[in-house]
Length: 104
Image 1 (cartoon, helix red, strand yellow):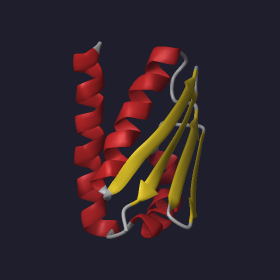
Image 2: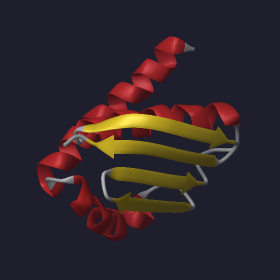
Image 3: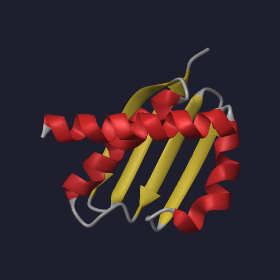
Image 4: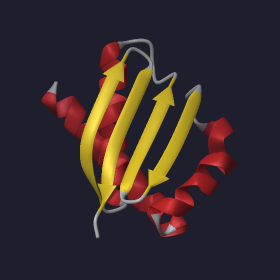
């Protein structure tokens, strides 16, 4: 289990580094999500940035709790690639909410 979660984290981090080279900062990420939304295999994604907190909510992330946990780990790596510090994750079948803080 740990090996699978580590792989999801690493892939999320790699994808984050690639997107960071284009987007630059986390606040530009919303534009990329809007442009490429149709290509993402999820039902809904919502990115909220308020002060130094970032919250990402996704639905349609798979049909099982395990799938949601893997997606959560990938998202954690993705956000950390942007220099954010992971705070919390909530998962349920088909649902992921990840919260992170922007390093000052």
